[in-house]
Length: 499
Ligand SMILES: Cc1cc2nc3c(=O)[nH]c(=O)nc-3n(C[C@H](O)[C@H](O)[C@H](O)COP(=O)(O)OP(=O)(O)OC[C@H]3O[C@@H](n4cnc5c(N)ncnc54)[C@H](O)[C@@H]3O)c2cc1C
Image 1 (cartoon, helix red, strand yellow):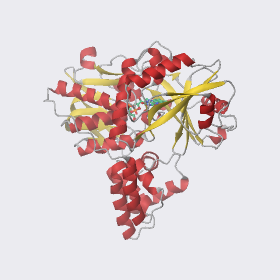
Image 2 (cartoon, rainbow, N blue to C red):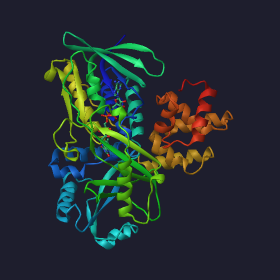
Image 3 (cartoon, protein in one colour):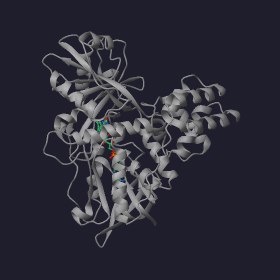
């Protein structure tokens, strides 16, 4: 039995953001995640840090303004992870969006949060559009717009970074550990039963407060209370496909309306290939059971091929797919129209369960502001003296980091592409990995770079399975079989407890 100020359930972007913020503000924190860090919805997102241009049409000015502000903060404080991109919206005769609505929306978008990192939108003629996208269909093309947003190629790595910050602030974080029951005493939440999915070990945790940050699993977790609050989540699921880049295909990020149903979707250069999505389908049930449907793949491929007819993508070209459930609030609106705002539901006020709150809704983009609000709530409930907010991590431009990494990598005879990769994954902490590579090379390890990253993932980044290591630390998606075999061998040779 252990006593903490705050038990956080869920190690996605929101749970980890709250853990990092709470521990930096002096609370003692326990975070429990049934799978791996960032392995839930966070890994199934479109990987954008964006204001959400689409939400303007639903009048969500407050949400868009908050998101745009967060976009600027994240791009400045974590520039190796969150980078500005310039998206093209091509316009076609007879298809949404209508040109004047688009012009108005983009003008508002640009004015809501002027930001030097994200240049204002610009209209493009047909020729301008074709210059940027020579492979784009000319049929019905009337021109387009360029606008700016942010991309976080690896939100999984952002989760790992938040994990490191939480642990450095004193938090305890248990992965592959499920909350199996929540305890109440005299109407107050007291703690939880935990079960380690890999070892079967059980333990009890005591905490003064509980925040349920289980994303689309929020209602399932609340069902573990002896008194069950009403359901809060009315999710929608979304699928992406990852395709190889082709010379006749998109050259930059695009946001376009699907011909079939007029829904906007993204085609995003990502990790040297294309991430295409998403669908948006109402969902109720167990989020662990949601599966990509054949019609979704067909829909995303045919819409991509319609825009870039020479690409002719087929189902066999799909490298992998992702699917996740958006943890949206219960709503009668149709999937695309449900608000993307986040809410902290205080179960003391609402349902007579003191000391407990659930996070509903929210985006990757707004995890930081949500975390601040959640910790404000916790500090108030604890009656603690509000501690100062943590200073954001000292930002270093990625180019500067890459130069430093390249100089070090050369000394270790690593290939030229090692430096940008190390910076994209580890940011300023690339030095930790390079130091390990140096030590291992000196000791004569033939697999030094891979071995160093595996050891780093296990010892510093809470990886507990081979999948954790390759998919969410090394970001190999899908992981090549030979790397998986090599990682297994390294773990066995080193006697690491990795499943
Ligand atoms: C298709 C799609 C595209 C999206 N695109 C974007 C985008 O481009 N930009 C953006 O800003 N947002 C986007 N979002 C939204 C964003 O991904 C989510 O809002 C965000 O990831 C939610 O994070 P979370 O931490 O709340 O949930 P999650 O990441 O799902 O984390 C919750 C965690 O709780 C754990 N858990 C569940 N039950 C238990 C239990 N009993 N015990 C312990 N742990 C438990 C789960 O394993 C999970 O890891 C998208 C969402 C989807 C589905």
